Image (cartoon, rainbow, N blue to C red; front, side, top):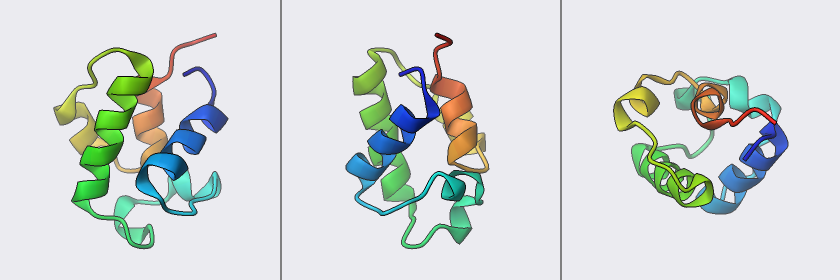
Length: 76
């Protein structure tokens, strides 16, 4: 996964919420219907999509989806 658009497409597909790219900068508590179970679901999906482990402690420190993207993005 190299692009932010790919990341957000995966987020929308895996968590089932109609989030916009702009929503990625909102704190998790401001995302409609967001909860900790969705975070775990996303973490699992990211590990499948990237083929590598994603640090749970790092994900838990993320303030928004964009922060998680920064953790998993692979430069082109």
